[in-house]
Structure formats: C-alpha cells, structure tokens
Length: 111
Image 1 (spheres, rainbow, N blue to C red):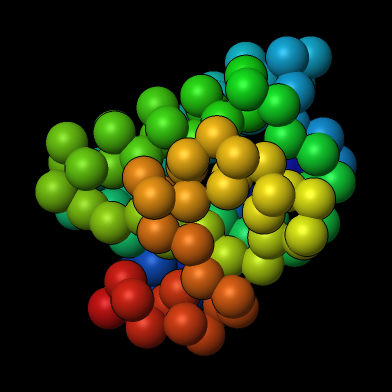
Image 2: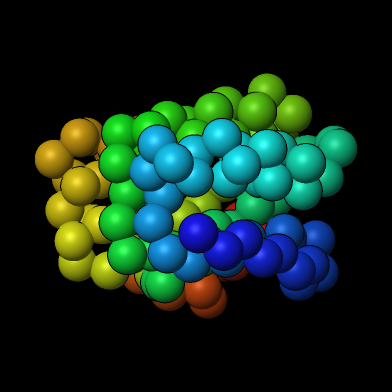
C-alpha cells in the first residue's frame, strides 16, 4: 500500500493507494498518526485508489478517527470505490465515519 499526504489550506489530505489489510495496517496507522497535525486536525482521506480494505484496515481508520476527535478535529473520507463502499456498508462503518463522494464535498464538510 502507498501512503501520501499534502496540505490544502488547513486540511490535511491523505491518499491511500492499494490494499489496507493486515499486512499493511500497522504501517498505515503509524503513517496516518504521524501525519496528523497537533491541534484540531482537519483530515480528508482519499480512498479513490484503495482497492481493498479488511477489518484490520477499518480498525486503522477508526483509531485515526478517534485520535482526530479527541484532538477536537474532524475526519472525512471520500472517493470510495464500489467494493470498498460495500465493505463500509456491511460493517456499519458508513454510519460511524463521514463518507463523501468527492474531494470537494469532503473539504466543504471539514471547513
């Protein structure tokens, strides 16, 4: 899995590419947590190139969401491909995390 991030104003945009599963979960979590801004982080996660997510990957996103919330920030996910969106729906994570269709709606929700 590839991990990249960039700053867009006050929002950190994280891009995940590949598979987020038990083999990549630990490094993904470390990279995500390390990239978080300290106070009141606003984070948008681009999942448009994520091919697959397992329960270990869902846990990573939940851990990051909790850290962001504890710091008084907001997290938005966007660009989920159909099979990844289905996993979010089946697991109920679509009711726990804020999902958006594209970057502009995710960024608007964070500002």
